[in-house]
Image (cartoon, rainbow, N blue to C red; front, side, top):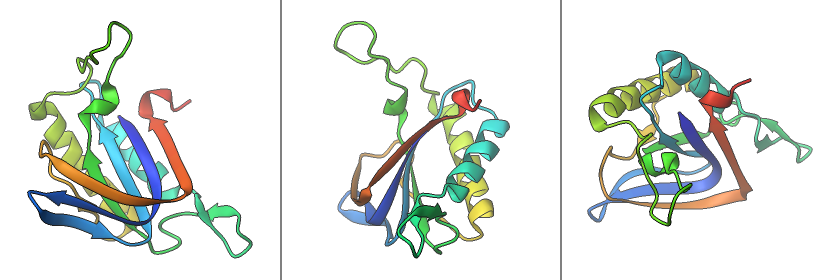
Length: 150
């Protein structure tokens, strides 16, 4: 799994001119799933992102997590995170999992983040044409690939 984690002051996901998800302070997480992903990847990434100390403490140091600040999370599926651009100018998405594999893993990831965070998270809609808006705070953007844990 690949995740792009962005610290935001606000974010939203709109589908067909309808706001599907909206948060204030928190994290917008774009997640790409591949066939090789497992429950171990899901659990590790969920714990990592909820406990990632990228929010400022009273001294202005990034030392507290989204959980610590009571922030919210939006999770959006994004198969293009697995784009390969090695050959030519047209990206290949061969590593991205097909919907029959990706959707159950995406749902499990959402459930794992909710469990770690201790409250519901908001989401986009798998496979939909989404308009994602955010104010990236900092900006702080972290890229995590569960295949590079160690």
